[in-house]
Image 1 (cartoon, one colour):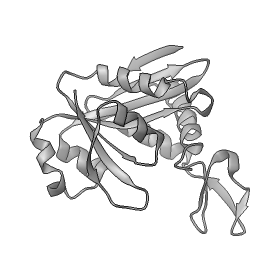
Image 2 (cartoon, rainbow, N blue to C red; image 1 turned 120 degrees about the vertical axis):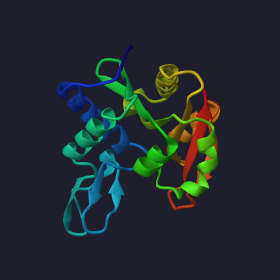
Image 3 (cartoon, rainbow, N blue to C red; image 1 turned 60 degrees about the vertical axis):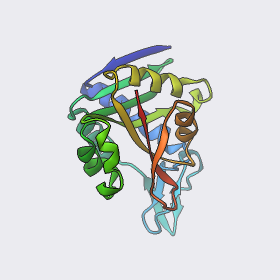
Length: 198
C-alpha cells in the first residue's frame, strides 16, 4: 500500500482519478454508473443494461464533468487530496477549506439560517468533498485510513463538514469517527449534513 498526500494534481493524475471516481461511484449504493436519458433510472456499472426505454444508456458522469469537478475542487483554498494505491489507484479522499457560508453556497444548498449556529464554531471549515474506495479493495479499512490521514493534514481545531446519505457506506464510517448529524434534508435519498470538530 502506498499513500500520497498532495494539494494539487497534474493532468495525468486527474485522468487516473477521473477513472477511479467513475468506477467507485458507479459500483456504490449511489448507482451512478450508467443512466437512462429517457426516464433517468440509474444503474450500477456491473448491472447496467445496454438500453432502457428503447434508448442507449449513457455514463452517469461524463469524463469531462468529473475532470472539471476535480479541477474546480483543487482551485479552492486549502485543497488537500489523499490517494491510496495498492497496485493502481484504489482509493481517494479530498476536500477544501472555506467559511461555512461559502461552503453552503457552493455545496450544501441549505437555507443558511438552518445551520448558522454551526458558523459560530469557527471562521474556517473543511468541506470533506469525496471519499471512495474501489470495489476490489473495500472491506479492508482503507476508507477509514483515507479519512484519518486527510483529517490529520488539517490545522488543529478545524471543524469538518460533509454531505452524505444515511444509506451510504460513508455514513457508517463517520459515525464511528466522531461525526454528528447536524442537518437532515428530509429527502428520499436520506441526505444529511454531518460535522466534527478536530
